[in-house]
Length: 72
Image (cartoon, rainbow, N blue to C red; front, side, top):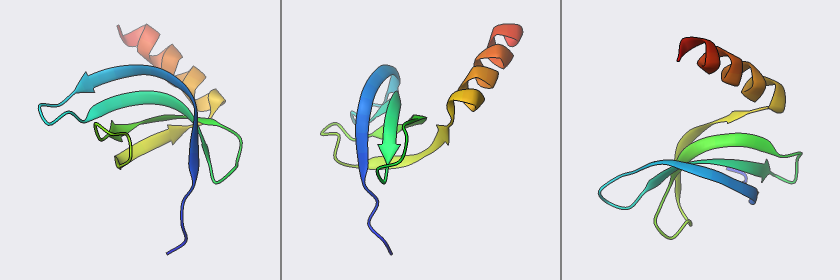
């Protein structure tokens, strides 16, 4: 399995924190030296381990924001 590299470009915010310290965060991340994308996933307290998440392009994030603005 190929190694996955990432660089957190900007931490945008924490959505929640579990009792064991894992935080669900929204970040701007560059995966494998590609252009940054918005990313929502859980991170361990040390920030070294991550859970499954979803990665969105800027266009997808804009659409999600519009959907949420219409629903709330």
